[in-house]
Image (tube, rainbow, N blue to C red; front, top):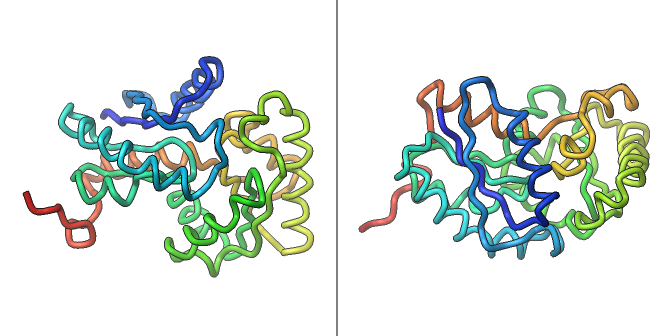
Length: 234
């Protein structure tokens, strides 16, 4: 099968690091294609504005990917940019990392603790969580206070803050599973297994969840309902 991953613009080394992380998530035999849209989540705040403005660009890639024979589309990152729009325009599965990882987490516990890059990302996350009908499963959302563009140079600080914030969610909010809503935290910079050993609870991997969910849908021959996402009249 062939899965198209849609990425924003990153500095060369940062982009390659993320592409390698994607490739590690795929099963043997799955071909991963990459397309880069003219938008960046790396330099700008991880926000609703970015997600909405990038949506049409992601949808254009989804249309091209379907025409080129790809079996599914996955926008990189937990903003799920363009997922809803693309589902109205293509028949192949379009999988969002944020939606898929929270739905998977909700099968494991009813007490999810969500970790974000910054607190200013939290309002949009709350909107998404309500839209995806998992709000009742989320007991808390907290930011680590390290913007995405500063993540590589502050890698050690990111790890420390992640552990601190996740520990707060576990101890003070009774979270039983931690969901990093930022794939640079996990798995690009740190593996979920490393964080699990430190925290003593499962730590989700949104990137791997999105790729493996896309693979599952393709293997099952299943996609989104055309009654939910009707195609526009031509």
